[in-house]
Image (tube, rainbow over all chains, first blue to last red):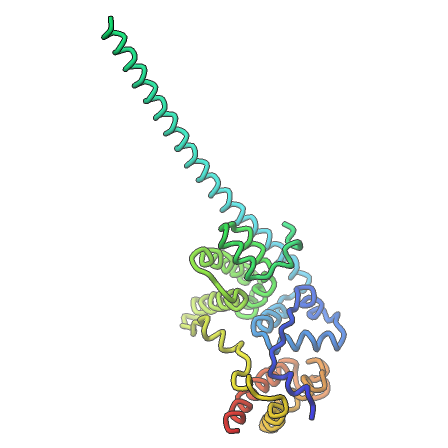
Length: 123
Length: 190
């Protein structure tokens, strides 16, 4: 009896990387390698849907370009968010410093007034 | 940004790092791993390159917002579900129809391995599989055998059988699904 029968229902745990996927789409893989990728496809709906979609891209060379563009935009957006967060933090810090300076100034002013008042009193 | 140096870090470890310091850069590294797959999924449903690119960006934004709100355990299935739902909503807007929205539970069921087979020994499992494979229709049986047992690629199977690549793919996937159902039934009977 063929032991490979058991492989049918055991989900494959290996991952396909982007390069393998691109090579598969470009028809650069050997029959063995193709079969290995297809074993993953049969187990993985995400990968399967993705491959069907990528096959619809007219010029396959565009895929890498689109991916790079999307990744650049993603990092730009995340950087913007980070900058906004830092700005907000800085602004909050400025308010804290201002408050500390005002309180210190008030304490010094009060102390000076008390000293002056006591000097007048002793005269 | 060079993310190669983070390759050894798993998805869940990246999520852990994010939940520890709330630094979005971890999400950037994580999402970037799936850009190509997400683009493919969006292309499959929307069939338009500009719409697909636009949708991937929106899926990114949605994922970032959601990940700030709650913890996700199975990131890969979760992001697939987010993308699929986004596309289905977009299609609904286009066609004015309401699609069935997926949730994490329905996705998890699809990925579940054969539950009844967990405690069964190999010989019994092989017997069940041999019986089950005979119950498939001819097309599915032929494609499943060529694919899993003879280790042929889709192209080779298409050439041998005369079916189209799409047919081969669907016979294999439906055949596998049916096998699972039949095997479960046989095991329960035993």
